[in-house]
Length: 310
Image (cartoon, rainbow, N blue to C red):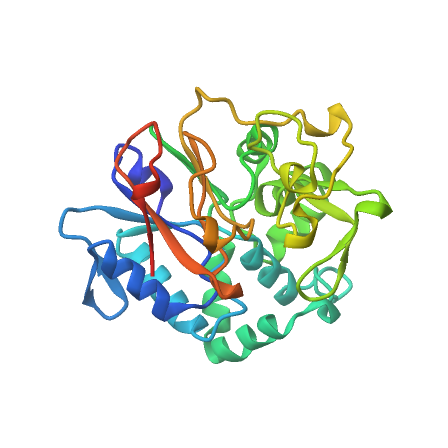
């Protein structure tokens, strides 16, 4: 499925990070008016399409169900699926470099990533091939979608010399190009900033985070941890943060077309759009939150009431 097949459409239902919560995915699809026409293939009676924003695997209990729905809908023209950082990591765990070592060290695998391996079983090669061809971004005349960070410089570089398929040969080429690899990481994982020791924090798994995910969509420099960084634990959100001006020059202009993304573990108790033309739709289903989608019909001012959750 080519992303330009959807270039003239403006009616999309954009669904955030699923992380293997297949039953919740079915619930959201049905709430948005989709029904199962044949096994795993959900379609809308009005011809609306889904944009899946990445991170289909790890963490949840129904990884194979999730992948079957996403892939089947994509292959039948009812959806676009873009790559998330978890799909990228999965490829890096399963392909090896010239030394016979996986591109991502095996000792970094989480319990959820090991469960993904078990779930896929004999189908792992088929899904590796599928994931390797997922696009990193979607854009048409009315909206933009990316897993983590719509960074113009990185996206321009990827469009100029990006790699068509991230199989073993593709990953070898990517890891040989440090500038391009950084662009991929920014788009898939978000730009991060080194944090001074006094501001470092422990994530939900207890790992001390020495870098923070910059809120690239912010319009002005923040003065607290929560204003400067996303995915911050509650106890750190209101902690004062003395930032340097040059660290927070990135932003997304008000006159740009609407952009949708996931990745940043927004709180399900504060569901909202971030700005008139900015919407993160990752509301932490894998952390006892909600799976959320946005009903988009070409509007250039995004609306809270268009968010749908399971």
